Length: 316
View 1 (cartoon, one colour):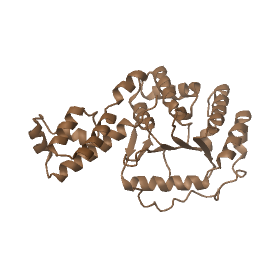
View 2 (cartoon, one colour):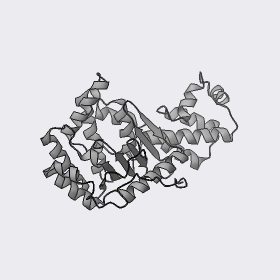
View 3 (tube, one colour):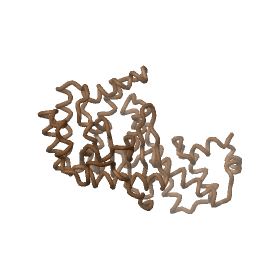
View 4 (tube, helix red, strand yellow):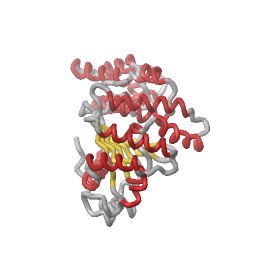
């Protein structure tokens, strides 16, 4: 199901806008809550931090306190409604783990999505069988994981790549992510063929990162996903994936570093057409990967680590 915006990002933007309005009026959290007869400042703090689904009536009360002019008021009401739309969407999904939910809310309204994966196929590109195996491993760490519910949710998330106005997706995969690594042969061949099919979609680009260009402690060290949104005022976001949790980054300094990382990956990864051909070869003969170290036509030297350039100036 497509959403016109990402609820979690609209909550972040709404909170930032309301915090700015309060500061312009030189009001403290306590003063605002006293005027509105709110029991504590935690409610307003959570709204400003984008940590809760806003109630439209509460937002209207805040706009009255801040004496917002009609044009800005209408804009903020639209943002508040977008920020509160997630409840109905999650009902259509059914059960979903907290970590998948965080990614799904970002994917829902993304205009561009760039992912890097050093070890596994990204979730949006997985077949049902491959996803079931990957999520089955998660149960070892979290016995309460409902694998089948998470598989269903992942398949619904993947619809984002096929909606009427899909995001521009770029996936960078280390060659190790294209190795079966104990996955049953039939499942793995189907997964590779699925990647080939996806790579032919007009909005999807998949590029393999050759061996040796991201080694020796150079960045990136962990999987990450970068999101931008149709409204340029909505904050761009980077998600870092770790073993048991995920970290969301949005500061200008963090975004500049990951922009630099993506620029470097664009320089060193195989072109999209060569990646598609390679994936098709691997689907027929997985042993091809063992002979590729000195044969892949890299865009930079492949005999040394990936040197990280200076970060760009933060984008607006």
